[in-house]
Image 1 (cartoon, rainbow, N blue to C red):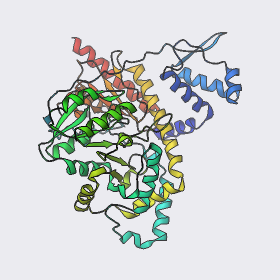
Image 2 (cartoon, one colour):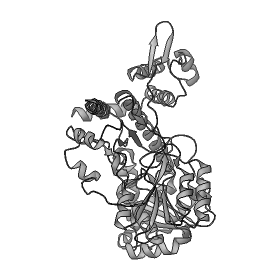
Image 3 (cartoon, rainbow, N blue to C red):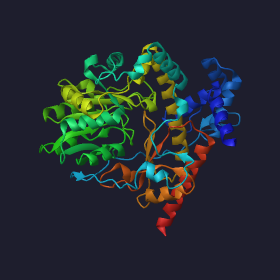
Length: 487
C-alpha cells in the first residue's frame, strides 16, 4: 500500500508547474548548459520571465536543492553545485573476425528474472503500461468492431491494411522519404520484420555485420538462422565506425548489415546524418544490403526527429524496420517493413510465415493515427522518457563508483554503464537479484561474450523513491565488488 501511495504521490507531483520547471532546469544542468558554480536566475527574474508565481519558482529551486543539484548561498541566491559527471565510454574494440553466435539459455532476461522475485526491474527494455493511451485505444477498438462486426472474421490482406499503410507512408514524409502504401508491409512487430529481411538476403553460414554491443534479440535471431556475426567498433555517441566497416567489407565476406542508427540498444548512440549518408553509399557500392532497425527513431528528446539511413537510399538497398509496439500498443504487436528492392521477396516470405497480421488491430491503430491522437501521445511519451532517463542518470552519477563510465543518450530509454574492468557484472547481477533488483549484464550483448564489466539499465518506468533506492543499492554493491577485487 505504501508503494502505491508513493507512486501516486510522484505522479501528482510531476503534474505540478514547479516540478516541470525543476525537470527542465535539471536537464539543463545534466547537459552542461547550466555549469557547476553558475548562478541561477533570481527568483524574481525567473518569475517575471516565465510568468510563474514566486512560490512556484521557490518550490522548483527547493526541489533541485533536495536532489543535490543546486545549493543556496545566504544573501546571494542559488548556484549549480559541483556535480560529478561520469565519463562516457569510448569506442568499443570487438574481435575483428566473424564468429558463430551461441546463446547460453541461462543468460536470457526471462531466465535471469526467474532466479529471484524481481521488485525493481531495470532489465527488460519495456515501458510502463501507464505511459500508453490505453483507454483511447480501447475505445477505438470497440468502435472498429461495432462499426464492422465481421472484421473479427476477416484475415485481411497478407501485406496489411491499406489505410494503415497509407498512414505510415504519410508519416515517412516527415523524415524525407517518398513512400507509397504499396511500399509498406505490415508485420507481427519488428521481430518478424527482422526475421523476414534476414531470410530474404542471407543463408546459413553467411556473415552479418552488427554493432558491438548489439541487441541480444538480434543475436538470438542470428543464432537461429546459423549466421555468423561480425562485431563492428561502435562509439556510444555516434554509432559504428564507418572506417572499420569500410575495411571489413573489402573482401566481400559480409552479406548483410543490421544496424540501429537512431538511439541504438543498448548504447543509445545516434549516428550523425553525414555518417548515415556515407554508410548507405558504401554498402550500395559493395552490394551489401542494409537492414535498418528504426524502432527508437521516434524517441528523441529535443528538436526534430532524426532521419533514418533509409532517407539517403536511392537504389532500394536499405530495408527499414519499425514498429508501434514500443510506441503505442505493446500487446498489438504491429510492425512494418519498407523492403526496398527485396519487397516482393519479403512479402512472399510473410505469406509463407504468418500469412497476415490481425486486421482489427491494424485498423484500430490506423484510426488512432488519423485522429491526431498519436502525435499528442508521442509528445507526452518523449517527455516522460526524457525525465525518467534524467532521473536515472542523476542517481547513477551520485551513487556509482567514480571510475564508472556512462552514456547519456539524446533519445530512447536505456543507459549503458561500463564499470571497472575488475568487476564482473554477472556477479553484480547475482547479488542484486538476491535483493529483488534486476538489470541486463553486458556480456549478453556480444556473441564474443565481451563487456563482462558492463550493464544496461532500462528507464521505462516513472521514477519513484523505490527506483532511487534500487540504483543506490546497485552503486553500493558495485563499490563492494570493486573493493573486494583490490584485496
